[in-house]
Image 1 (cartoon, rainbow, N blue to C red):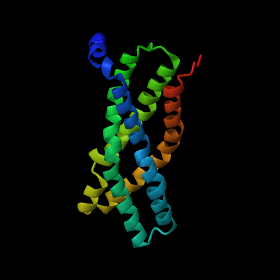
Image 2 (cartoon, helix red, strand yellow):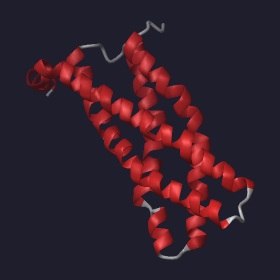
Image 3 (tube, helix red, strand yellow):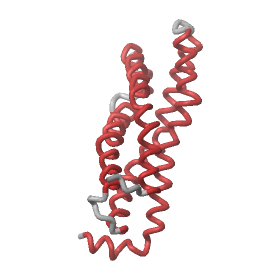
Image 4 (cartoon, rainbow, N blue to C red):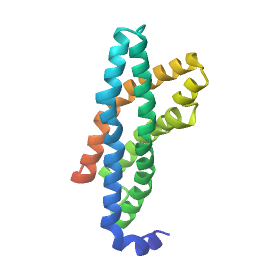
Length: 176
């Protein structure tokens, strides 16, 4: 199987690497910008005056728009998961290379659980738009707050592990 992958894709290595890196950039930065410049600000303003219906409507609109925009991230992540192993096979790096093992562990134990929950909260559970349209505002508010808590929990992990994973891929340090 590995030889078949090598024979089929070896001449496309740089193209696969380009697609992989593009997907990493889309995945890692597409929602970061929206979070930093829109979600966080809308939440902060609403939290200062939660009874203001205009600020509540703005917060809700921003969260719903974020759920629409996160689709790019959620297309990019499976592309990363597909192209990464192909690149590993094509590059002929030993799987037991420390930087590769660390990178795989970060993907499997940090990014994958984050993304599974993120897919669910943005698309596969009852989405915030569906809850609002069904006029279930108690569940809607609970989902908004759960999504905000999710952001508060995962943001430090993303801030640390995304650049570190990129560092591992580019520098390929000898770790031990």
